[in-house]
Image (cartoon, rainbow, N blue to C red; front, side):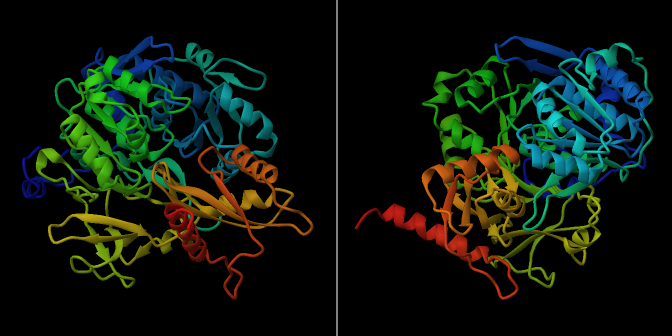
Length: 550
């Protein structure tokens, strides 16, 4: 934890990492509070109709103990991977905690993933178990025969043929379980992220990843914990943002968390939820903040108790930053990181660290710099790559089963982010853009390779390339350039069919919202698509659209 201070230099001077020799996430987010404050609220789950279900730390811990015993009885052991295909719900937190108690590895999966995306991740991770709900089960049933390593499937919505019931397993298990003694470097979770080429990579984190997040989350929430704090995020708990920027830091600090499963983000409902539940702290990604702007005069329409809002996942932008401050009377604390090494740059208005258009300063405990291609630190106002120095407790252990990719992530002791930035004379870092092909859309980082692989499965597609096209709401949208097979003609019906094809097989955030049919793609002499030229073309299209007809 960091000691609250009114200025940045004091924060830096007073901070030292204190990583214990033995550490398990489950012990700090659940066991400790179940012993010290058993009746304290841990999670308030709000259902669609508005009724709430409260879980104390004692109830949450006992449920996690029962599920840990159940998993162990079903053959889940230390080091086994257990996937979670679940929305925000108490059972999601229970399953995570139980997995950590066992020393197993949690593999969170987004509920919006399609069949191909799920099949790849489950097979690549070697997942032995899966916890899901009815919606997830419908997808898994269609591909289970193609996932030979998946031995156990548990549904939180009840028993079905070939599937275990979460509640039945709970009822048959003891609520006493001794959390396995693990080290900070023992693997705890694996979150898949997309690269510029090929299939997504599993980012393997040790238990220390939670400790590494704490200073950045404290700063982004204006020195949480404080009396009356209660946190909510619209972010999926399958994403690093939902898990490590919100759920687990809050539980670690003993701050209650509101869970609510949006089928589709609704700005009005979000404001009403924050009002009705007296939310004081929120983690809201930039795209969601931009969508909240569509609500007229929210500060006067809703009786909000918010005292802090953190935002990360993409650049917030000056306009949204300024709108929020004007509307609500305090500033969003923007921060920055990647799935591999998160919450390393940040803002904290309470400590005087806040600047419109900047993603913050290095958070205490993290050494961040702008470097050149050789790993040399660059002077202020010089464009270079944002990099983070190791060792660092928030940094990933490795890419799962990809040692070469892990090595390529570093220049010496600098972990390179692939993001271009500039550090100004005052020490604020400004995000400029990516030096790779990753698409950032609505806080998701999307690799074009997975989209292109899926497009090629369509019977009409011969070649394709996916890029990010600038978009005022989502930062970028996925745009695909498609070469059709010989003899086929492009039309609106085919474009719609291709979009639906990708959406059903990957996810709702990865399918191309725009498709352009082209005769050929720009290629290098070695046969690689030059996506840079396609991005330039997309920007030119935007300029032409903005200028209008001549």
